[in-house]
Length: 117
Image (tube, rainbow, N blue to C red; front, side, top):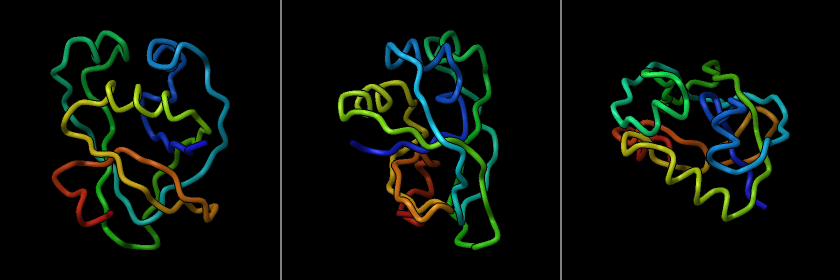
């Protein structure tokens, strides 16, 4: 089963219920070599689901000292596809290394995705 790292709204119970139809159980972890900023979300369905107009977004910077805290979840392939549907076009899913030395899917800033993938 795939691992999904979330540093943002996919950690929210209401987003999990809406996106996956269940609450996820996860473990704290850090995304290494990335920095976080905020993104204006204009998709009304995503805003309605999350309750937020601005969502966190990350981009690769390659610095071992840069860390983004979040949660890693074990999900099904079908749930990963539903996460893809939830995320807006500004995000791209890439495989990244976590502080725990596990690899997990993470949604990053699509403009900079090639630098970190």
